[in-house]
Length: 391
Image (tube, rainbow, N blue to C red; front, side, top):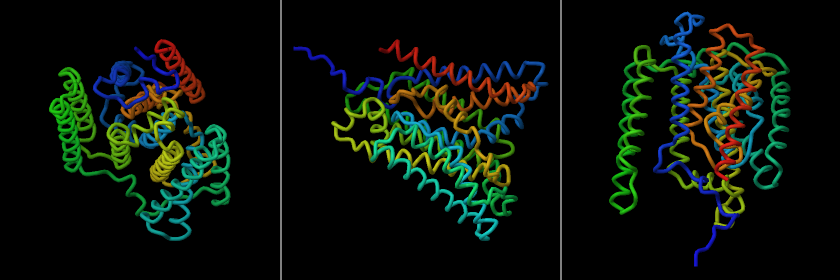
């Protein structure tokens, strides 16, 4: 007798991207290329947009957004949210700056302390959300206020600048030769993993990815590597961009290749079904918030290095809007269980491209805020409509 699927079982889409092509990612890649083409030919941009310098600036200025967006993707995948990331950036930046400027500590100590502070922030919120069952919106909204206030108290509400000379390691540039070697090594590893996955599934008698899927993935990797080398191959890659790239790669491996990643998708699909299947929902939730806390600290360090200081009252302000917008337009569903790190990366690039383009076009900053809000609403509407179609 044919049994109907229980309505409480995880949704079919609540799993990491598998053998199929991630159509949303390819759609976002197409949107990104279209935006670049339009901005390149608009007379108002004065032919500046597609220059190597402008693209490098675009990626460097949005590196901290992409770093936090990777963590926010994990949080949203488990049906959570983190509204405190902007305040967390300010607090961790203040911790690093205070140790540098007032305690005379070297950069590596200040950075390590900032990362530890981020982990504590994440663990604190993870306990309230995972163990005590307080809604993530409430917990992180409290953090939104408390962490900003703590940053102001620690710094005596004063700006901290400039950072010491050794802190410039976070804004340095990796030599061109090392950039080429790193990009080509990652490309070779990605192609090898793609080929090995197909061969392994075939050897085990499982349905392997089609030739088209393998070709699409390989083509995407080659194209991305070529773009990175075209931008940074001549001058070298800035450290913030390299850090963001490492975070993205780690996020892809975590969500696609580990048990923890599968548990994240399962919890987002149906938390109760995940618990009944033996997944420790509270522990996974705690670690997700620890991860986003650490990545918030990484962003705080990168931003402090880029602006050469910390302004506790405004550092990271409205970062929540930027990060959530990048994640949502990258295809991660606010209802949880569906999305990918690659989509988030492309969403962050689309978002950064729009901001960069509006600056080149001379759009007023107040209108830019309105545009950001409309972009977020449009992305949420698309998510709601696609969810209705799946239902």
